[in-house]
Length: 328
Image (cartoon, rainbow, N blue to C red):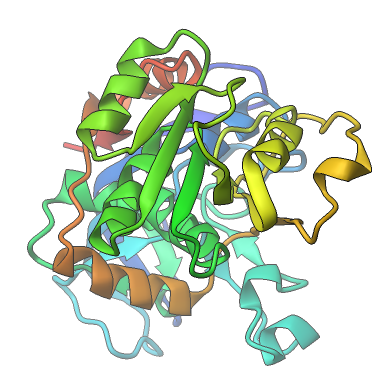
């Protein structure tokens, strides 16, 4: 099979030929159709997420068809189309798993980080962490739901019943979650990098009540804010934008350092919290909800061999919606 391999951080991915991977009794062998590109992939390539498996096949928003499976696989079948997310394994026995918090399992392993992912023609995955996909979603449109959608959904749920929500960074997750917010008759205030006129217009087209630069205050206080961009200085900006009792959710796996800020902008029972990974329950809930809305994903398609170009476009803010690798 062909695969795009990361040999070491801060180096371009290399196209190589590898044997089709073997699978264990609890794994399925998947023929990859598409794999969306995530900012987490950039953090791994840039060395900001340390200690990945090397060499590594990136990619954790995988859509493909099961070609073979191990003897212990249940509830799946050969020929079935499935999605594979970031969370790829949990122990089911640590205190976090036993308290329904498998997303912070002590022994968790992650697709495209500890485990080889979907920037390849084939991959293997634990059957317990594969989601059957609604047939109404084509491969390319389904792929961004598996991280941008799922982890965005977990972050969105942390805002409770907030009616006015700020989205800091309007990329893959935000363009998916604004559709859920509008479906629930909530208002979204979109914050983009300064000068990103196209990004603000994209947010307005998707129904944002207001769109402006990330260093601006919104026209009215917010009930909550979600920070999708990996920029630490947005934390005090978001705290200043939310009303008393508001919550600020940091949705990314990595963020630049948060600058010091006065206690006064956290006081009055504002809450600052992070979201880590996802649970299988998040996946089941969101993938059942998405076709009811229905959520439409805007995609920018790249062939597998142009994975480096896709990563660079994402780094430079040239992607509206999601970048997706098409695996022929």
